[in-house]
Amino acid sequence: MHERFSDRARRAMALANQEAIRLHHDFLAPVHMFMGILAVTSSVATLVLRNMGVDLETLRSELNKMVEPGRKDIHATKMAQNAAMRQVVQYAIDEARKLGHKYVGTEHLLLGCLREGSDIPAKLLNGRGVKLEHIREEILTLLRSSTYEDHAGVASGHDAMEWIHQQELAKAFHSPRFWHRLIMAVDSANRLGHGEVSDEHLLLAILREPEGFVAQMLAEKGVTVDWVRERVTRSAAI
Image 1 (tube, rainbow, N blue to C red):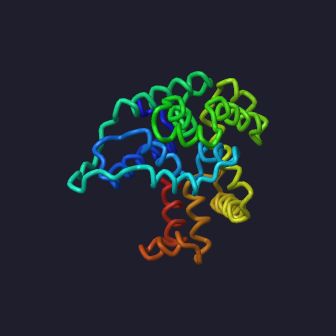
Image 2: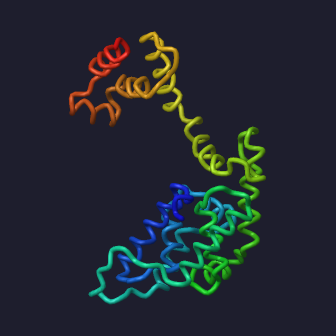
Image 3: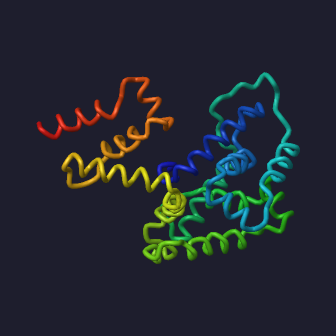
């Protein structure tokens, strides 16, 4: 079932499990899920909440005050979902289906927490005036405001997973460092007489900036521009 979850949704699930461990709980509940969602700071769910004027730091602080820790002798590492948490997951899948999405993301898990209704997340958000229909509307607003014209079909459910990744890629496209690396990768491909840019050219672009962290780390292992270029040339000749 979780193979339909986006990378960030899976990350939120893993962090929810960690929160349950930290609190010495032997079960996974909606409150842990909500903590996991808030911990994935660059997700659609957290963007939606910020857009709706929710102070995430204050929300986290209130959550921590409301959740009672379990017994110190509980040391479970992989918790089973309680009934409410199973309901959250089912609601999340249903919300994704209703929105025409082919995946389950953090935004759907957030909707699932609200639809479940009886646990701490729903009570906290409802107390701030954040209602289920408001979250749905904000998600659709984000879909419609996608910066890429070729995402027009996303809101109707076509390739729905792509829009999140494109939103994240937009940040990279505004980075001068990103463009510099990309140009250097193209230059490396041209120097080697290759018709298209591949992984090895991106690696060469990184190594051509020896002051970079990755380049320094690879240099410690003996991976240099000359070494990679030689291996690439040798491989192309085979």
